[in-house]
Image 1: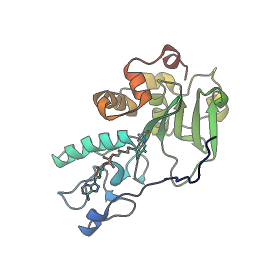
Image 2: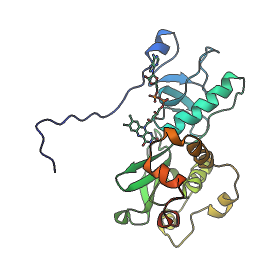
Image 3: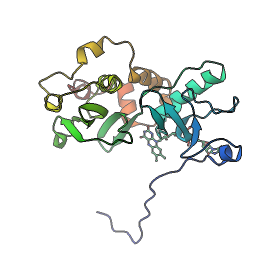
Length: 224
Ligand SMILES: Cc1cc2nc3c(=O)[nH]c(=O)nc-3n(C[C@H](O)[C@H](O)[C@H](O)COP(=O)(O)OP(=O)(O)OC[C@H]3O[C@@H](n4cnc5c(N)ncnc54)[C@H](O)[C@@H]3O)c2cc1C
């Protein structure tokens, strides 16, 4: 507990889309772009925090305020400028460190909200997974001090698989779809890991540095 005469809490940001709005582009919670990150003006693209991009997997436009999104959208926008019309379909993702805890989150609950949060592992231990379910479908998931499971969680969300909440919470039962996902070549965070390594100098994350250096045995052997 710290004594203080005055506490200033700075919470929240807003996208600086004034320039785009003044240029006549559609704005509203950022610069509105299509799935390949282009605006109706063929010479203007938007990526990162300021881009409110249509997401083909989620089925709605979303603005994501996280570093991997900025890095990966920047790359894709550059390709779009060169004539590649690939959609940006990576699921929203972030990693963070909160004191001694490292965590990754993937997915998005969306405007429909969620019905329950299912924990896999005991949160009081500081090592667990959390899943946000709408009905029987996983919309988002977070791994806290448990590593190498984010690809699996992303695969479950991408596949919109129905799950049994009780089985999902039971650590004695493998995560649903785990076996087939292991053999899947396409995953959201495989790319992220690669990019995170490539951009190590720009990402001042302790968890990131820990992973680049191979992590601790106890972290990396944690079971999903
Ligand atoms: C305190 C804090 C902690 C964060 N922690 C995490 C985290 O743990 N994990 C995570 O994934 N993300 C985190 N983020 C979010 C992450 O930093 C952002 O998602 C990322 O920096 C976005 O990159 P960007 O290039 O889209 O935007 P920015 O990094 O904001 O860059 C935009 C640049 O454009 C410039 N600019 C704006 N308007 C104009 C203009 N009209 N003309 C010229 N230049 C202009 C700005 O000055 C700025 O330099 C954090 C952010 C903050 C603030």
